[in-house]
Length: 224
Ligand code: URA
Image 1 (cartoon, rainbow, N blue to C red):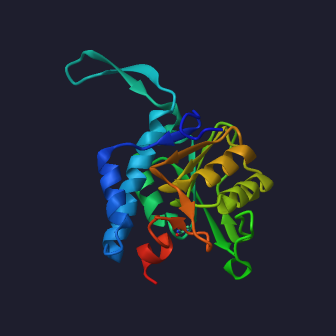
Image 2 (cartoon, rainbow, N blue to C red):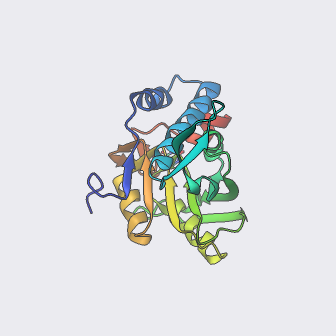
Image 3 (cartoon, rainbow, N blue to C red):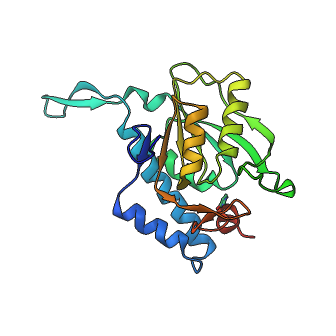
C-alpha cells in the first residue's frame, strides 16, 4: 500500500498544527509548553476525525420564530476514546474538548525495553491495566497514542480490546507522528481501520524511537 494515497490514512495539514508540532520537536521546549502543545494537537486531530463523520440535515426554530436549516452529526455521541497511558493523556484532553460526549477507556501498555526491539522492528508489549466502557457495534473507537513508531503498541492494544469484547463500527488511530512501517502494519492487521496523523517521519533508531521525532513524549509531557 501507498500511505500517501490510501484513503484510510488522513493527514492534519493545518499550518497551525504543523507549527505546534515543530515547537514540540524542539529540544528546548519545556515540559508545560510541551504538554499544552499535545492538548492543542488533540483538538486538531479530533476536528479532522469529526470531519469524516456522516452528517444529516436538520432544522431548528430560531428566536425569530423562523426555521433554519442546519446539520447534526449523529456519531458525536457514538465515540469511545481509549487512551494509551501515559503520553496520550494530554492528547485526549484536547480531543474531549471537541467530542465532549465521548466515553473513555484506559490501557496501560509498556514496551518491554529490556528485551529490545527485534530485528523486524517489533516490541513485546506488556499490558497491565485495561478498563473501558462497552464498545458497541455502532461506536467509533478512537485509540489515541501520540507516537506511532513500530505499531507494536497499537496492534497489541487493539487485540486486547477485541479479546475483551469490543465490537466497534469503526476503528480510528489518532497520533501525532507516525512512521510508514507503523501505518502499514496497523492497516494490514486491521484493514477496516483508519489512521489520523499530523506527520510521518522517515526513520526509527535502534531503540525504536522515531527520527527526527520529538523524543520520549511521556517524559517530555510529564517530566523525566
Ligand atoms: N515513544 C515515544 O515517546 N517516542 C518515540 O519516538 C517512540 C515511541
